[in-house]
Length: 445
Ligand code: SF4
Image 1 (cartoon, rainbow, N blue to C red):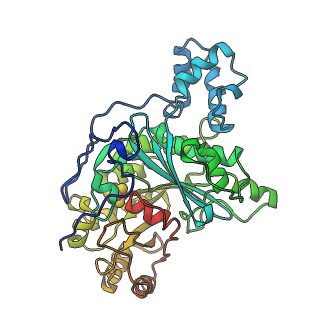
Image 2: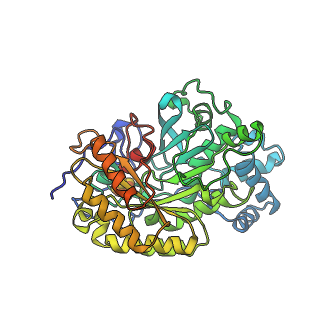
Image 3: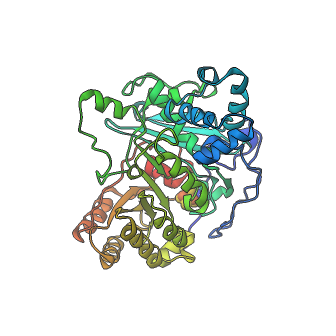
């Protein structure tokens, strides 16, 4: 089957400079030919070093190298991860003579907002960020009554070239650093902690005047990641405690731009920063973190040995190699069977139930026999280890593909459930927001 490329979205990673007024750092991204994979990120200047790139020990060394007492590292960590302070003027425990040097060296600005889009009555917000070199990435903030989720990007662009995804069509610009990934979450957490009370939605600031935190706080975050209900006890505690939980980021999903496991070291570093106890990190539960992949088998196996019980989400989209070779070109390297074996191995190693993501595309992959085949393949490996999330495709402008007919979708779900496979159609939050990544658009909306 021949699959045509989709049109790029409004502000893709490869957008020309005059589309945004930014310096064009994305010229290095080369549009791939259909099916072509870009496994190695182009060599690009590195982002400035940041506190969040470093372990606690490395922070002490970095501070000492600046001629400061090592305990200043902990003070900086408290400001960044615990108090979520961005303004150096509020870091009054740092001597004025040292503050500028410490903040300038270890807390450089990494993300600048260039567009903020909202939908779902303000409960879902997508922010397009400019990185230090002009590359553009995005994050999505979603708030639900009890939880708040940030969907983060891990690469500027993507080299996996899924033909239904606008990001994939623009190619890979570069890997993001650990701190650039973490900062997307900290920005949202900062807003929830210091901004308008969670639950209010009184508008979005102009993009140019965006305090990312304020937007996150004002508009709130949501969650669609842990349908298993295995996260925190969302319903327990007093009303005040529940309100507190709403005012923090409870979940992070690596489902924005990029293939997370193609930027392995930075992504694992970011997961560690998110889950390190405060003030070394944000103190999140690893159970609230989901890392998606198109199926980089060696990296899945490596992740299983990290001792990080995050949820793995395998973007399968087809149960047969013939179709998946086209929908998810990495399948030409790692087959459906190999990807599912690795996913099952991940479950065996971590005890964490794996999510199978399946974008339902009308008349392409939504056939009942494909649901049957998927159910059979999953059950061949075991029971109770996996959950399937069919996702109505969020078509990009100009794409000839669209979401499945609702009756076809219902039949697909019913077939999987008939095989005893837990199946939940994903929330379609943010559907009217232009999605830069087919995967992100599908999961964030
Ligand atoms: S769907 Fe995800 S993995 Fe595939 S090209 Fe898009 S960003 Fe990359």
